[in-house]
Length: 291
Ligand code: SF4
Image (cartoon, rainbow, N blue to C red):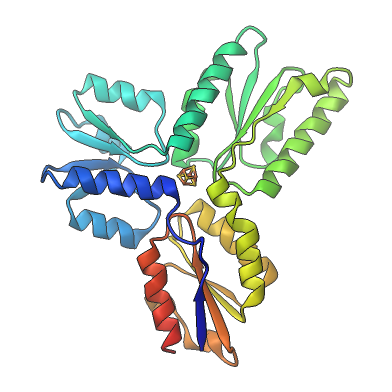
């Protein structure tokens, strides 16, 4: 069977950068703690743990002193940096530069909109590390919306500055922004356009993959999507494939492959999320080719 790998699949630049920073730091032989999983992929986490990176929870972080802690690509809220200073922890900051600049922008907008009592609305997944960092940057006027069901949290008489988690779907973000705009129009027909400012913060490394994946999934009989189960963009990008190809299958490890998926197929495509290592996609493609 002919097997192709989708060329844009694999680590995004932010994750690649964070893994390279971790590998560099580990070369000195010291224990490096990592706040949370460095990437939402168990197999890659296990590889880095083998090199000496120790993932820790937030509770464990609270009790650490005098050591080195790596901050992953998702970034952290200001409170994490403050705690590190208090406990003499050296931070190795692998926050993705795109996330970092969004945090700075949010802080600036929060500062500038204080007098007009603006709301900093973050569209994202509850509990996601990047979103926790963004809400932390927004401060007390930050509001999280995970979808249409949360839009009642917004006061439509006050200015809204809307930002999205970098890995959300562009289409869904536009829908949420449009509903907010319509709700504002109802409440303040004359001022709705000045009350809402939508910031385009979906990362091009993710949104650029949607059309490529759609086209790739259409062209192949069977699609194997490789991603960690807790990867936000993995779920979202898999849905993109599934929408156009019902023979799309999500796996997080090569041993989940099922021969029956390929019955009658003459070709297959293998692709993955921004948190899926390229070597794993390659390994899966070789196994599929051997079926
Ligand atoms: S998806 Fe984009 S913003 Fe998120 S870590 Fe990757 S490069 Fe950075």
